[in-house]
Image (cartoon, rainbow, N blue to C red; front, side, top):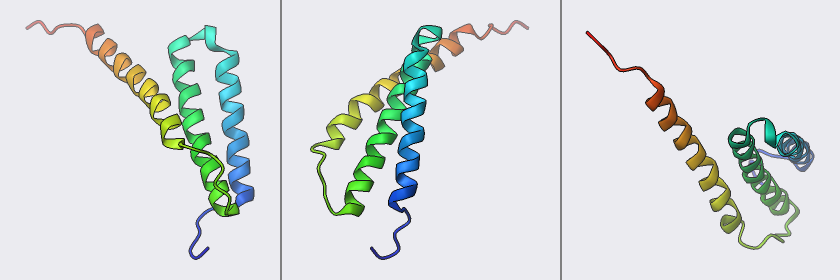
Length: 97
């Protein structure tokens, strides 16, 4: 492919690191469920992008509807971050002059 910015070996290394991140988050879920759930979902989203890119480079698109897989995972992580952000705003003390 012309001007390809990724190679398959590097993408496989990225995928392995994402699998590790996912495993650690899954294994330590009880330490901080909201955080670990968010990390799991983001690792799964990134992993899907990696898998799709590997398939493109191999000329074999096997995954059906990656968008349908990614959107709910991303929505979950996004809502967790919004919830966290709102929680932090509520904890901020009111100003008194």
